[in-house]
Image 1: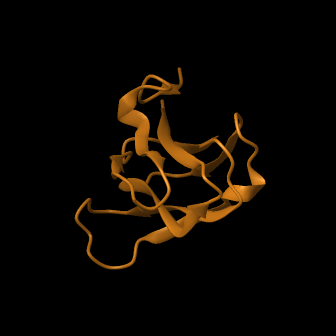
Image 2: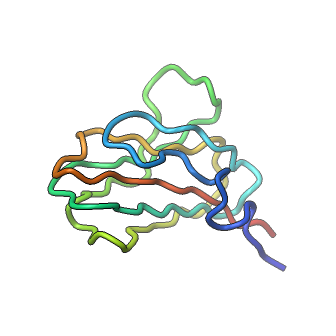
Length: 115
């Protein structure tokens, strides 16, 4: 049987919450065979880039390995941009590498598939 590690849309899945800049909270997903991410846009967004990245240690001080790069302007308000990555990883986080512009903001959620 396969199932999500966390209840979808619960606060524990939020790496970034209604922000325009910054590095998100790292979420432990080492026990998952696949990870997924969902980027939610609120308001009008005309620019910005969100990076999904991982490292084996939560406090890793070097450059984390990039899994995906998402152009915020390509996601329509009220919808989600999403992606997946197969394989176990330690910790995953979202990071805004280029500030979100246009007056809106983003929320990034991460989850994993167990089983």
